Image 1 (tube, helix red, strand yellow):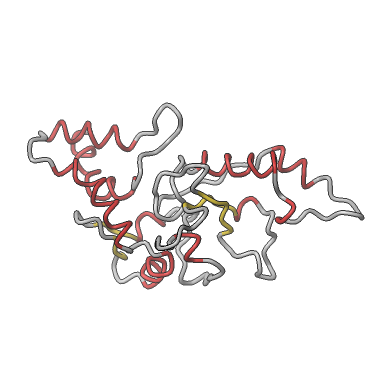
Image 2 (cartoon, one colour):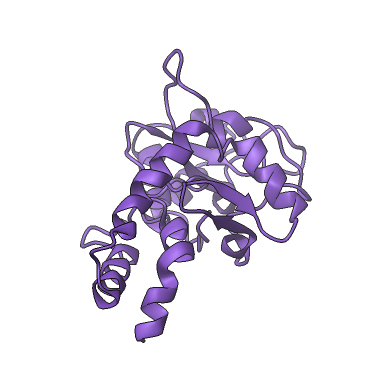
Length: 212
């Protein structure tokens, strides 16, 4: 889970909400068209186009706007931008496993769900070379988060393992590995982070630090 620094909401979204009147109160169900697209684009950009939970690469077609705290809670404003994230999986195909926001659904426990908007979130998980994710130091909330979001389902373990595999090449010198890792952890020209960013940094980031 990569730390997400929330930015300001898109101006078009602010302007749309400001249209509220005695005759019309904007709701999340009303959000569509250019305003919804602007919100989703802003979310993907501030996340470096990685899923807010599993860190798969996001695409517009295979992602959805996620309410970190579910909309049904009494203290939640469904249009509060600071509570919005972008999660992978849009339309679920039969037979494909649910995970991340789709599996989380309306579940929420402030004491058991690690927030990607908390600056300590990255340190609460560890990864192994076989692609598995683990809670650090018997962190009960991290364990519950892994289970409730399906972060350890075979599909995600396999994808993490595939991302890790090139870094395990015995033919890479230490300097080559360092450059490889450094390049992987930097955004590309379009503002995209590479998938499973915290997995690679957690396992191989030391190679970069040793050189620097």
